[in-house]
Length: 215
Image (cartoon, rainbow, N blue to C red; front, side, top):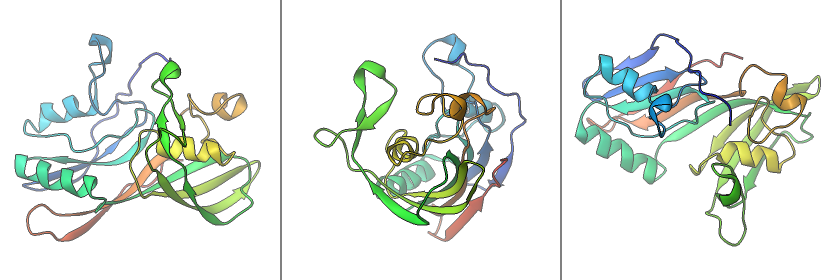
């Protein structure tokens, strides 16, 4: 397990109103505190220092950057939580993956389960896994890698990372699922939450929030 040295990037607020707060999470920062004092620093506690009423709605992996929404009221937290639970939100990610993909687009439909001896790693498990689907589209390829857009239809832990590995194209810089130069020759995991579409908790208006990938 890599040591935890979270970045000191200033908070980047994308949107703030009376119900919701959207920020661009930097790579390398936990969404919520981990176990132990050495993992206490996280995006939630940093936000609560500035926005005391901020409440968690969903998470991004530590090594993933990009758009995250937080609630500023209990009503907003419930409303947004149900949207995620019932798949009413739409999330779009950008990734750089190892290898040049032969196809232009596709759907990965492989059930996922925690790999208990190696947790927190996940793996494909057709007997015990939970359903997981990821749509993908290759944006460009060359120099031994591909740039892809990923649209998860479910929200399983490490879903995009394991699904890309299952295709034979692990995400570059991924400390768990890539190996050799694909893991070691990159300063971070090349996965970014580019866009989040949701319904506003006050009135249900459809909104879209974006943060450009830094790679």
